[in-house]
Image 1 (cartoon, one colour):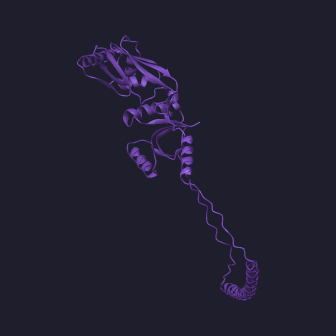
Image 2: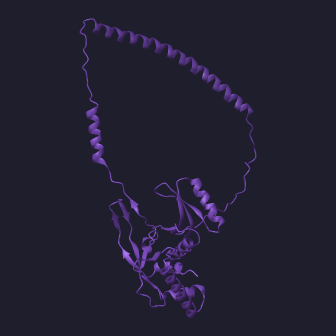
Length: 314
C-alpha cells in the first residue's frame, strides 16, 4: 500500500503529519517573494520539511487512512509501521525513496535522512490559482542610446534650392491659371448636359418598371396565413464559481481535442473560454462549493494529471 497520497492530502489541511516509527513531514508558511536572479514573483506557499525525531504516533495519519479504507485502527497502525520499517531498510541499503507530490528521501554520508521537497505543488489552499510570474525589465535607456547612436551614424544634410530669377516666369503662371479655368468651364457645361439626358432616361425606365410590376402583382382577399408558435427549450450548463482546470491552449482546436479526451474518460469536461492571455481554457468540472472543488482537484491530481489546478471567480 502507498501512503504518500494520504500524506499529501493531509498536508493541505495540517502543518504536521507523522508517519509512526519513521518521522514527521512539517509544513511552514512562506510569504510571497521575488527571485532577483530570474525576475520571478513567487506566490505565498507552504515550505515542506522532514524531521526524523518526531516519530511518535499522533493518530492523524492512521485515523485518516482507516476512515478512507474503512478498516480497523489497530490493523492500519500495524500496516503503516511496516511501511515505515520498509522505508528505513531501503534507505540503509543506499536507495532513495520518491514520495508522490511530497519529495525525495535519501541517506547522506553520515547515514542521516536528507529530504528534497517537491516544488511543483503549493500546499497553501489560499494560494490556489496563483502561479509564479516572470517579469522582463524594460530596457528604455538601452533603446534610447541605440537611437542616438543611429542618428550619429546617419547625418541628414539639407541643401537649399536655388531659384532662377526671371521676369517672364510670373506671366507663365497667370497664363496657366487662365487656361485651366477655361477648360474646367467647358468640361462642366458638357458634363451638366450629359447628366440631364441620363436623368430623363432613368425616369422613363423607372416608370416603365413600376407599370410592369403593378400589372403582374396578385392581391389576396383572404387574411395572411398565421403559422403556429414553436417553443424551443434551450438547456445551458450551469457553471459554478470554482473550476478545476485541465489546461490552457493557444489553438482552440487543441482545446476541443482535450475536451473530447476528458469526456471519453468520464469527466464533465467543457470549454471554459479565453483568458486574458489569449489562451483557450479547458476544465474538468465546475463547482459552487470551494471545498468540493478542492477535493475533486486532489482526486484529479492522483488519477489523471498532476498539472491540474483550480480557478476561482469572484
